Image 1: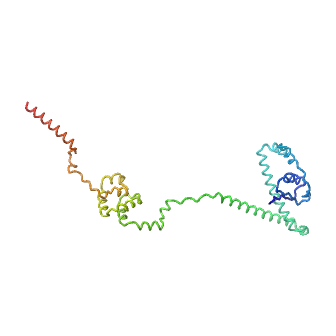
Image 2 (image 1 turned 120 degrees about the horizontal axis):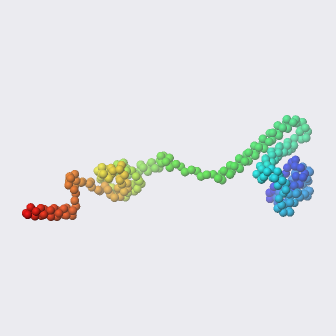
Length: 284
């Protein structure tokens, strides 16, 4: 079973006792200091915070005093963050000094000047920051990989503007008669439905083209910019190639009104009544 090792250098004996008092009670946690001020086998002395925790949830007076002196909880939080940042920088220097002590003997260290020590310490601090940055970068990459956004959908207009080879071959395989109809029909809508109707009905292309020749000039097709032209599939399903041209009556251009048979009979009867009354008046 893995254990967590807590160690440090340059820690005062009183602080070591406090750390032992808090962490020795935790399972799988081993506290070991290289400084012999507090032997590893000695019984830890319970520190004041630990004793206070064991006695009950009484609030420590020291943080309360600091918070009161700083002017409130937000100021205390900022002060704590500053202390932690300073502690991290101090620990970086402490680890660099420890590596220096492990790498050089006492005789070699005595031969180093103050400038040599500062330069070596600066190099070790830079290496530590570089390793820390690499670890943070790996953590950030692993976090981003678990929250990657799905790839955006392709632009439909781009897909339509670049037809694939399969679609081009499908167009080439369309019946030539249907392609001829499609080129001559004025409204090009719902080509798939039109192809389905054409395949089902198989109309004669010569009659289709002849019907389109006169139907394209009809008032319904030329009115409002062709708004009332039926869709190709509708035109085919209604077998509109079998329609006959519309010829208006001979008197359509005269000034005589067009009457139905019933209205014409009524008008004739009224004219007869008027004629009899005129004849009666003339006889008197």
